[in-house]
Length: 372
Image 1 (tube, rainbow, N blue to C red):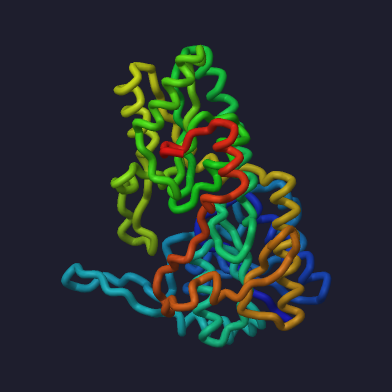
Image 2: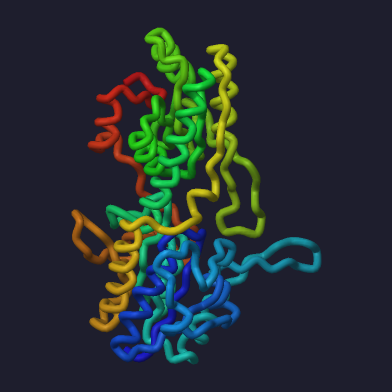
């Protein structure tokens, strides 16, 4: 093992720089050169690289984001190309990337990303590239691992927001809604809602009945609690309804951008209760800022272990944490065993309806907009 390539793909999150630091320090301490591709797979496609060394990775442990940059708009297996008639065709340029990595003399590519990015990593493994994945997403929705770095930092940010909303809600007798990220998985909403003392939590895994939400708020009001806090994941949807789409981004592999469920829930609550109701969309606040101490430790473990796996010759796997122990899982399992090369990933982890935390939340009286 002489030379490792690394890229940070998908959306940014706290801890990315710490993973890079863990990779760099472990590699250089073992005489291994590290090169980074800028802006995720875009840098791999265009050959835009930077050498990682002790100087440019110094002081990264407290910095959010990624010094390599990140992009969620490049799928090297399906690059959009506009034709003369205005139509768009998608071209597979992965073989060009394979040749570039071989020409650079890379012995291994470490991909730090979410389910879509790790799906592409799996596909490069099928093309003969030695690949190792590191699970990154604030949503904590990657299969095969109990926890992803960035999640704890996002939950901490959301919890702090709920704490601040509590004071205004209580002072003005309002219902305040906090919309957090979570397109398919409600982990952020669930954990921050429990930690922040929310009264209602709405998640994608449990379609909600707005009347049940109102019932919970009215019950609190009958007990003299003239305010309520509702945490809503962006992917929550009403029973029989669909998710709220904010816009479509045509040049992105993941074209749908969610948003608006918080405002819709606020409007429905105010109409039914007569209580002043306002929604706050936390948005990219969840992705930014310094990683928590937990995420700094986890990111260091993941980055260093990825290099150790490379030195051991264990490829086409993702570093994972199961039952509080470091392990690996095949990238084929992460991507979905039956998912074709170049196809979008649809293999995501969600909140289990029988999970201890969800059941505890119900026992302490938190509503989920359903009959239970």
